Every structure is written in C-alpha cells, then in structure tokens.
Amino acid sequence: MPASPDHTLLIRGATVLLPDGRLQQTQVLLRGDRIEHVGEQVGEDLAAIADPVVDEVIEAQGLTLLPGVIDPQVHFREPGLEHKEDLSTASRACARGGVTSFLEMPNTNPLTTTQEALNDKLARAAQKSVVNYGFFIGATAENLPDLREANPTCGIKIFMGSMHGDLLVDQEAILDQLFATGTRLIAVHAEDQARIAQRRQEFAGITDPAIHSVIQDNQAAVNATQLALKLSKKYQRRLHILHLSTAEEAELLRHDKPTWVTAEVTPQHLLLNTGFYEKLGSLIQMNPPIRSTHDNEVLWQALKDGVIDFIATDHAPHTLAEKGRANTIHQTKENESSPTVFLEPAKVPSGMPGVETSLPLMLTQAMQGRCTIAQVANWMSTAVAKGYGIENKGAIAPGYDADLVLVDLQNYHPVLREELQTKCGWSPFEGWSLTGWPIVTIVGGQVVFDRGKFNTAVRGQALKFSAPT
Image: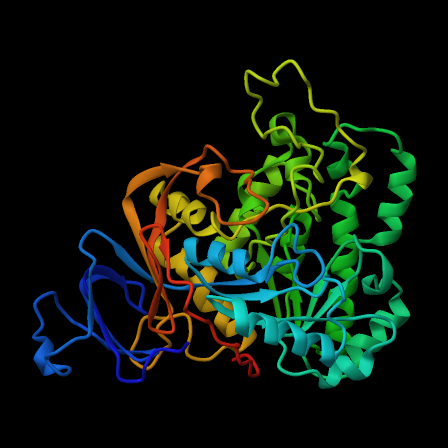
C-alpha cells in the first residue's frame, strides 16, 4: 500500500548526499511519498519546518543517506521462469541492495512484445514488487505497431545478438526500419550474431569456460555498436547502448557520441576479467562476456569521464544446476574430490545475479579512492533518472520522491550466500569484503528493509517516463 499522504518520517543525524555533491550531516523530513525538507545543520529546530509531532524517526548517526538506486537493466524471470527468480524474491533482493526502482527486460515466457504481455507484467508487479518498476517492450521483426503504441514502457529492447527466436533482430534492413519508425528510446544488446555463429563453429567442442570470451570477442561487440550508432545518427533516434564491455567501444564513443546517445556499464565488466574464469568458471559466463584487465581500465576511465553515463547490473539469475555448478561455488571437503564438469559455453545459460551487491561494490571502490560517493550516486541513480525521463527521482531534495537508502560506510562485511535474497542463491562476488551495505531502504516514504528485516506489505509504484532532458 502507498504511504499515507500525511505520514511523516524523520531521518535524523545521517550524513546526507546533497544534490551539489556535498556530504553533510543533517536531517531529512519525509511526508507521504515525498521529501519535504532537507535541513541545513544538525540542530535545526524541527518545529520550524513541520508539525512538532513526527510519526516515525530513524536515528541514522554514522550512516550515509543516498538516493535510491535505479537499476536500468534486470531480468527477473517472471512470467515463465520463476524457478530462477520471481518478482517477489527479486524485489526483496533489490531492497536489500538499496535498489528502489528497476527496469526489466522482455525475454520472459511469454515474451514482452505486446501490450497484453506488458499489462500482465505491470499487474504482477503491482501485486508483488516491494520496489518501483518499469518494463521494456521487446522488438521482433513483426511487432512494429506494438513498439510504437505500448504504454507505459521505458523503451524498446533490441537483441542484435546473443539471442534466439523472435527476439533476435540481426538483419540490418529490419533494424533500419525499427530505428526509422517512432521516437521511443531504443536500447540495444550490441553483439554481431553472424560473427558469433561463425566463431562458435570455429571453436566447437571446447569446454573451457574462458572460450566464451574468445567466441563472443571484442570485435563482435564493436561491429554491432558501430551499426547501432550508424542507424541512430541516420534517424537521430534516441539510443542507449546496454552493458558496454570493450575498450574499443568506449573509445569509439569517446570520439563519436551524439548528444542523444547514452551508454551503461555493469560492475562485473568493471571488476571481473578473464582471469576469474579459473576460479568461477561458468558462473561468470554472461553476454557480452567478461573481458580483459585492459578493458576494465578503459571502461573505468570512460565512466569517470562521462563517456559512459550510468551503471546497470544486468541481473540475470540462473540456478547452479543450470550453470553446471550444482555442487557449490567453492569446493568443500565433501566434494573437493569431485571436480566440476564443464559444459560447452553454448550449452550454459549466460548471466549472473547482481542487484544485491552492485551498490556495495561501487561504494567500496569509492572508499578505496577509485571514484567518489557522489559519482556512484550519479551513475546509479541521478543519471539513470535523467536518461530514461523518470521525474522526481535521483536526488535528495524537497519535492523529490522519497526513495532513499541508508548505507554503512564505516564497516566491511563479506558477501554471504546465506544472506542473499535472490532465488538462485549465489553470487559471483561471494566472499568479497564490501562496505556501503544498505542498512535501511525506503520506497515511497515507507521503510521496506531495515537491518535485515523486510516489510513485505510495501508495494512499489509503476514508473512514469517522459522525454529525457
């Protein structure tokens, strides 16, 4: 249920990230689902800014208050694949990770390619999701009218590669027609399907998980990104490039990025590389694949320079059995004599979970000096809201939606499998010691996660999308 419009919640003593990037210890007053006031100093008289009686107080000394994360690329598997994840488990994972809004992809069963399928997802989320939600509509060769008219949707998702069936759109003539028709944002999974198919034949039979990054190589990504850019410039069509993964693509955008084009990167493409295959094998198989340390470094620089606009997780859970790792991530005494049998990458589903760890991963990087807390909040909230035209989100300021997260930057805690909320039950970052874990997550003015406990009565709202500013 939504917050009562008169309910007041005071967050007292937190170090607050202000819209200008400053961190200041102060208090924030919420009324209903909006931020009503952000104090100027710790001791400001509450009676001067609101009724002296406050319904709820969170004592937040020692914690840092940030805008709630907006994750612009997730795969939550409902309907049709609920054995891996569903909207209830996924939205709880979001809340634990400080993600207060998500944008979900169309490759469910049935595919989200019609207004009817979109309506079904919206109805399911209204019933189950404890955080805010939006959904992409998927492009096929046949559904141009749906792509123009479906509403509300954050944009059109085109799989240029790494897909099969109706959602694979890899013919330039069809892509040209999609870019030429309408004005809605197009988000592309940019990989060259023809090159992938050719290289799968070339490397057939190799079961080393690392071959995945060889088959779906940097050039496959560059080819597709170049084509998407060409079509976007031809029609001046709003384009978003999903999960940028290569140094070559980052440098391409550095020198050729129209104002109507944006791009994102995932934490795994910043922090993991092909050296991790030896330990994690197929668990880190994703599309586009994990790349080299050189790609990591160039992507980091592009992110800090504004060439890459924001961060998404591409949360895409699969069971350990599906990944061919039904024993454990780390060998135990009971099974250390039973080596994992690796399958050919084409037989292993690509993807990994991420919504619970993305914010701590990035805040840990900030605390280690690689970026700033303000940059993390911009990449994970403010810039996403701007890119998708989501109004009143992404800042801690009066009038903005009360989607907030209190994090602990004073202590480190490992990623533990038993604490994960995602139904798949594992993380590629298991054992990593991270800071910036969410302590309290607030959605629409209501506390949905508080020190390990969930208020499952909270329901997020459907996001609204306008033309990006």
